[in-house]
Length: 606
Image (cartoon, rainbow, N blue to C red):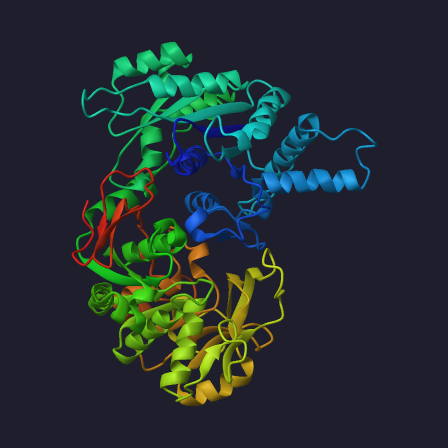
């Protein structure tokens, strides 16, 4: 087993996750099998209880693992299926060591950070690296490890020490360290400054790790004299210094690495020069080119409660992007804070209320994503009502589906006191209830999590056609509450179809309104399995309906291929640096993409 470690220096948010994923893509294109591990130095056992504002979205795996969003990047880039153990946290490591100590497995020894914690980290890496994640038998050839945080952080020190020991354990030719650093350009002098990277590498070497490759983030390509200076002071060959400069879209990053022969440098360090094959990245070239050429726009109103941070809905945005490129449309996302649609905002902030409703009414389609808590719930119900009454394409995910059911009960079935017991435990008409596959008291890892099977119950429904008229699908879940099965017959008599259910017929998975252009709700999270070359069918349905192409897409669907094959050229990134939230500029997290993408009523502009 060969290992590639990706670390970051100077500042956070440089794009280590995208860099690690792109390295995996290039090595995979050389014919190697790849697996990935993400190390998060926080004390949480997993990301399940962390606020989206704190850490971005919680990504859910097939096995129910609630993990860091970077594992979503790995799965999308490499088209692999990871496990919960591919995400290592300080909490997991300490918990495993303490459990062993309580069982007496250390035979009375004083349990310390070195060697017990550091050994546990190394053992975990070696064990998980051997788990196949690409559907083939046997272990992968290369494991790409990303160390979260920045070199010098106190919380990551045990991992730095463990990885230093690990490089010695696996021996020369089996370990390659790629250090991602920043080479800023000061506007005053216009010169690329190397000192931050020099200090970062010095700190890394002082901790026992020596970089083999430098990946330098900058606004433009590094000048040759800058590379020579970095090589001299950082003790890295100039040929092993790579520039990750700003590009038009995130899918060009693997192409940057290929063009700068990064794969050759990594293969040389890992003694894999017997793989002379050039990386085949034709699909990535096509994807990036298609995205850059898109002109016709499709506008989707994203009605949620975490609209202040795009990473909160990262997988949803990626799935929308995959689908929009499938339909050859340039994606425009109008961020609508669900609280701003509510009557209370009309009194307290009439400007924000008017702006929110203008965005909603100006959109081609409406998407209400998942969430927890009662803040903004009424706004989501109003968004579902608007879409239903005005024949606007609608996709509700998890809570978005539940609120569509509540809205239907209130306004179509005239059950004015209909509600979810999540928000009103004593609701007189509980149309969404707590289902028993979980705990009401413990929050972490207690929900209905991971891959579950959904069986289609209505032949010829839109959802079944989009999935290729298969009998069942496997999608990922993350929820505690579900539609009350005792009210299903009443709903169906009123015109709301439950076209997808679990094997017991007690859990409602997919809803549709048959005579609506596209009104679909899913209890599961289809975004987690969307891939650039295999976009989520329900998202394709939303974009197709929003752009007037749904009939064409449904006609082209077959059991052999859910999405018409001619569409598979996707994808481009959606990494906004600035958005208009209800008419007000708001700074968001950025990745390895340069252009400022303005997501507002006027479209997306670089």
